[in-house]
Length: 206
Image (cartoon, rainbow, N blue to C red; front, side):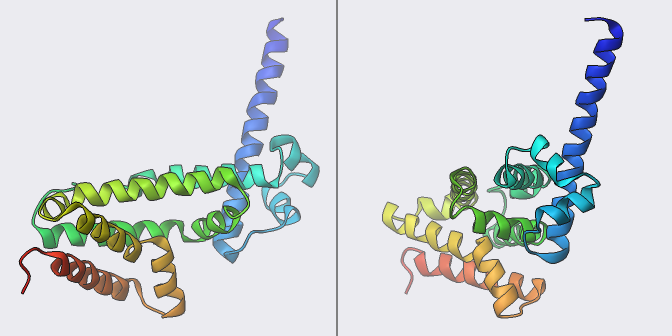
């Protein structure tokens, strides 16, 4: 292959990747604005490409949505962590858990809703959510290891399951949208809830 041919191929590849990125950014922007999955016409118009081009860059609308959700989660990867996990007094650890989860959910909310709705008939997205939930469960076990170590295994499992449920995205979304809580009120309620759950499982509790 000549130098000119290499340049042309590299140029097409770069243009293709730019257009793919533009389509993904367009979908993310539309979801953030409307909080619903946009049509292919809306995505193409925002990205500045034709509708037929979408399916040259992506195998299907499902493929586009999957890659968009994965890219969005990668973009916010640091927020999936609990800072200095497992360190410090219990009250501080509860604060860091609540702060980490509420900040994450606020940042990914529209795309997280789309991921959950599409996961019902999309095994790949369903698998991604299973992995995230398993990761969060492991984080809770590490973050509250001293408290769990003092409990029988069954009680510790119950505590992890309840704290995980309380601080889940689904819980955050319910409290924010149905009950109209501000983020400050969510944090207050969650801190009280997590503290109360841990206290209720504490050994030798009167």
